[in-house]
Amino acid sequence: MTTADQPILELDRVWRVHGSGHTAVEALRDASLTVSAGELVAVMGPSGSGKSTLLTLAGGLDRPTEGAVRVLGQDLAGLGPDQLAAVRRRTLGYVFQELNLLPGLTAAENVSLPLELEGMRPGPARDQALAALERVGLAKLVDRFPDDLSGGEQQRVAIARAVVGERRLLLADEPTGALDSVTGESVMRLLRDACDHHGAAGVLVTHDAAHAAWADRVVFLRDGVLVDQAGPLAGPEALLRTEGARP
Amino acid sequence: MSMKLGLLALLSDGPTHGYQLKHDFESRTGGAWLLNVGQVYTTLQRLERDGLVAPAGDDGDERRVFGITDAGRRAIDDWYAEPVVVAAPPRDELAIKVLLALAADAVDVRGVLQRQRTATIEQLQEYTRLKRQADTDEELAWVLLLDAMILKAEAEVRWLDLCEARLRRRDAAADATTKTDGGPR
Image (cartoon, rainbow over all chains, first blue to last red; front, side, top):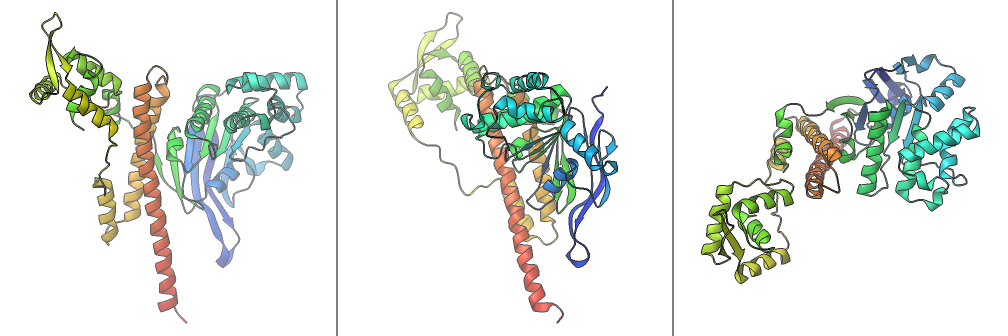
């Protein structure tokens, strides 16, 4: 049973250093970050600031040089390759700018594939895929192939694939990259919904402040260091203009 | 803009009284500008003096009703026909503060930029929260107003990012010059 503030992801004083000696590059320096169930955290920073490194470590695709990365309390460094692969398949969902949908499979098949790879039988896997596609508003397009879907619809399929099977940690890298403003906003609504109503924790890497603003917290990376954090405004000054202005 | 133009724009739909004008103006503009009813009546008197509106009796509850005149209609047509001129260069406090910080040796410009970025994103989060709660179909004016504020805040963050990127480039170039000129041989 999960509670609302159970940490799903913990980066505990994480360093990631590539190379050694004079040529060592410190991609991440002493970074600590906790993301709880129901929480969406955005990571912003210029290119080369360590955003992608943070995401690959959180996804177990790379290991820290020092410090610990824990998912649902489990230190990823203590897991063997098979266990790590299982965590990646069962607990983590990825939404990248490059969608990586398989062109020869329908929307429903793209979403059910990770479940079938987990050993689920095709019938129940399809049922779960249809439920996930309904959540993202694609109930009527489940049998379309990716090429017959718009960019926004394809990104919705990718989100359905990321959340299917009740994954607990969503990792999104510029998920609104090539989409227009209104479509990008609907993608942000879906990520928000996955955290608000399905108990997932989300980490969103973006350079777009308007999309980052959908997150509960925004953290800033500079040269591998987490330098600052923005959270919701508290107190009446937050509503100074907007709330009072509403007719 | 002046309240005169706002009231004229509403009166071009038909004659009405000051209380109704106040209500319609606020609801159609998403509450961007709250009017004081006393100011509304003062403005109507000025518009009447200028021949842009004329009295049209009362509404039965002793509230004076005003209607737009031909001259008033021409004024509002001209207003819609002309694009709004955005004053340039900007004289906003943020731009001036950053430019002055840049020239002052004792000021940590990057700190100024980051504190502003954090504050602006917090404001963005607030606008976004309000937008999430709004009904896009039922409250279109309100949502469009929030969109305008979100885009302005977003532009500010992008400008801060650009300031920082240019500063980095300048500092990197300065470092390279120091190394070639004064570095040990």
